[in-house]
Length: 353
Image (cartoon, rainbow, N blue to C red; front, side):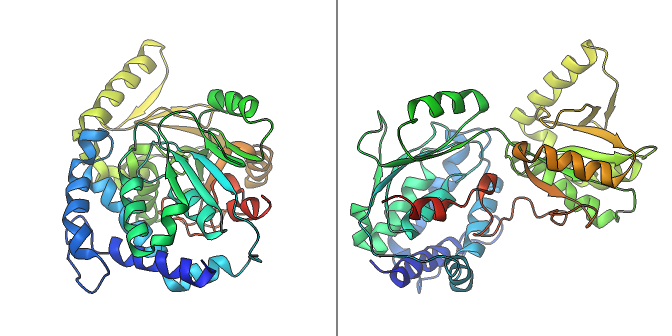
């Protein structure tokens, strides 16, 4: 299957996904195989929260729409233009996927297929339904993919390389277990925001999106704020009040109550608005329903700090205050060429021979 055929398949998938949105799902019979798959996928979206309590329909629809926007002809052309694809023998790359947010492993999945290799997928127990459904749709669009996509529940066998995503603890296990195979082993990462007090209300509302999307469960969610000494959080709290509905989700509320109680019993000083706690802490990894913050003296100091800790940071958000930062509200809207952990999955895949 040549590159243009593969790109056309993913463009078709993007058109299929674009039919589904939280407030305005709309069947488009011009999209191939819609009659066969539309109702089943809509039902799967509605059932997602029964499979994983964090997968509310709102969050699943957001993920689906993000991929619908990404899988366009223009984006796929731009993404693939940077690589030299050859017609070498297809190898099998195993994927061990996380399940913290909906379709979190989909980028690895399409990267391997675009590179021309076969994919052997072990899904997370927390996300066992969405990706297999999309794979079934892709195979219906292009039957040649049936021989290139395999899902496995038990032990992984018969693969040439592996991409595994997990915690820092599981990463140690992966590194040992797959020491004889080419691999990408992903560990815990967090995202941070750098503020200077000059942010507009609109920017701070957008920062709330970076914090609360997927309930803060993703590595692209902002879990740490760097603020100048003397910074007042009044404007921040006023802006993020728009996200107050998050406390009505039971799993989030349980985490808020628990983590707040732990902090208070430890006599930590907290800032609290009834659905989010702010705690001064040098760590980047805050628990769900909490964001850590740290004061800084100069932006130069922060840039050096972030550079030295680059291995633990996924995204930096700011109003162009530091290098390599992205605008507020964009952390959960990555482009196809934005790679997890900044490791180019296609380049890795193309080295497997």
